[in-house]
Image 1 (tube, helix red, strand yellow):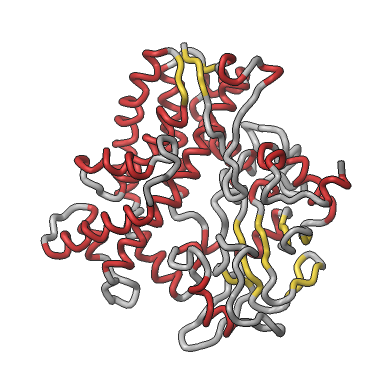
Image 2 (image 1 turned 90 degrees about the horizontal axis):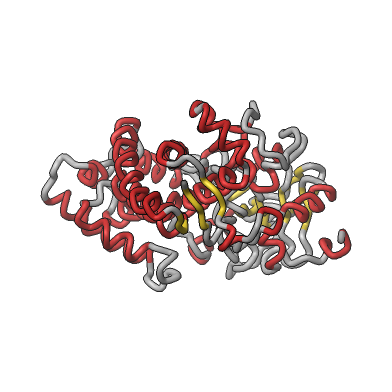
Length: 423
């Protein structure tokens, strides 16, 4: 098996996508930093090593050259798209600056480096204030019950399409102040269940939020969208409409899909482990840590990339400038150096929240508080509205022969469907 793992194409092997953890264990045995053979990416399976990378972004002080080690310019493109200029020498700062716009996703916040990232994130955080989150949570409770009405009445159903996706989509729409009259349009255009994203979600989001922002700048209304439309960068300047729309779209896309997968894994854990279900039914104070342990054990974000700006060394491995570094949260969150019995779900785990499912450092997911609340509210309402949650044997087989279909991608880990039986 080890010999097979040595030649595995992590990016295309369906068996690895369905169950990556034996492969991650093998990679970790090679060291916390290991260069995979297919594309030459340096895989990071060590928790401490991943946090070191997250904490050291390529920084761009005003009017100075970059001084950090890692750039986020290739966070999505990874090793698959090359710069038009040659990558040579021990410092490729100038090449990154000149060519970063050639990479896919280069107009999105996760790929930005400071100071541009700092300014854009400042704008994003204007959408996620404590007061706005509190008001949004009130909406969550009501909308969760609306979706659960049909689910509970039927006695069984498919979680992803019937609850997780419409719930997360509509919650973010409410957070960002999308008029309720437009919620159906957002669900239609952004659903990944109904049409496999035949619509172009980012184009739809850009267009809609650009319209909202232009309207609110012309006619302020004292609502959430007006707050976004009138928000300024730290230096007091007003963003272009495109920049403000980009921020809103980033929050929508970045938070929704991963939260769907988190909810799916949390409900599967409840259905598979009746002992855990009883514990949280008897003590709802355990729910927040249940959510954290779910994120640790089944991290929805499977991979993120970085590019080394300068030659460096990590865990004794030489990384030339221009190397692709591949962070694997699902592996790092099962690093036995940080988490005891890492493959076990421990509802009482004291350091569960040390996971890096939301990233770390300046690129920590801005929507992490929102996702945590969505997970908590979901579990609270499912437990309050049912006496038992079980996995559908008709859809997934008996307990000793379960079968689940996973997303066929190396970027995200998640269930495509989860059929539950409720009583």
